[in-house]
Length: 160
Length: 171
Image (cartoon, each protein chain N blue to C red):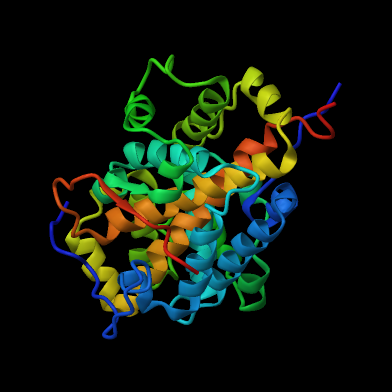
């Protein structure tokens, strides 16, 4: 009997998608570009990824850290505050980080509920391209979290 | 939701629907998005009409007005009909769809509504698919979802929009 895959997460999703060949490579290029664009730091995006993962109940995501964010000095104190849902009370978050994390939460819940005020706050801190980059990143991050959850429940090995 | 767009567009227009949108403001991600969007409809392993089914199922869930109104010509040429589109838009009652189409809708709905809860029978049916087809389905629904939510997040969406057939934006 086929066993069930476990612990598939957004950072390791390429293994589950490799069969798509060039399409999978194109998807990975987009993933890489999200983390290397100049408007948002990898540390900030990693905090957003963990925030979305927590909302989705994607526990496998919470155990891994994006290498670019770690290399840039990602604060584990901030990570634990995000994972623990203690952002409001925690010290050390900048106003820009708090705005981005609020935006990430709204985007994850229902993008149509994002207010003009919140979008303006993002633009104040990151500029108009930063708002676009954040929206793109959140969509791609959430997509990979969702796919990770689905593939984690798929049987592993050959179907035959 | 505001009716005003929250971000501008590039100063120079190209005639390309993605490059000329607000997404064109982030040059580092633009070409990966353009390339990926074009590749999704190249016809293998998932036929364009099947890819369009995933796109429209997502568009309805996200309630992206423009996404719902667009029909890609390659999908129409591959047999997508407005009757089929109506079936895709239905919340329940997928009787008019083939077994393969129903599987696609069930996969899309799991992604969109409860990715943490993949039903065992659906997992078995998905596992029986060729690996490249399943991967194509996964990348397609994730990409469509990200782009339609980007459109909604950037606002400026009309309240309604007529059904419009267009070509897939070239890479």
